[in-house]
Image (tube, rainbow over all chains, first blue to last red; front, side, top):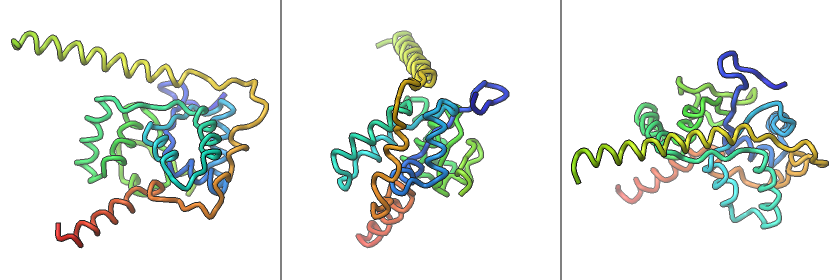
Length: 136
Length: 76
């Protein structure tokens, strides 16, 4: 069942905000299919608390929509920002000139040994973390 | 506070931080119940509609560039 990693058993994925936005906006096929695999338990994926914040902060989302989005988020464990993630974020920020949020996201993927699922091109030159843009 | 006390305090905090990370790792092992009749993914697919702006969160660097531009305008 699911995609396996030779060393650590199941591969883990950290889903970035833009993938969820693609699913919520237009039901973009690859983003939606990826989330379906997560729902079926075939893929182990999580999101950062930052993504939860970014998804729910928008004033353009109606309260009823927020409730449904929160249902979607129950599929994904929320990864908190720990001191070691902050330390790693500082290193990434200095090495790659990333902003605070970007560096925290990529550091979360690094510290949880996850593949970062994102379509943000700013992460494409990060060597320490494997990036999956779902074919885009 | 002596150096010994500071070291001890740091050690305790590091142990707690390690525990925090171990607790986070447990979250991955909680699987989604298979009894759900409707797919939450299907329920939320396209819920915001294509008119919904992708927003700055889509590519955070856009926000940063806008911010830098604003700072430059302010002469900072």
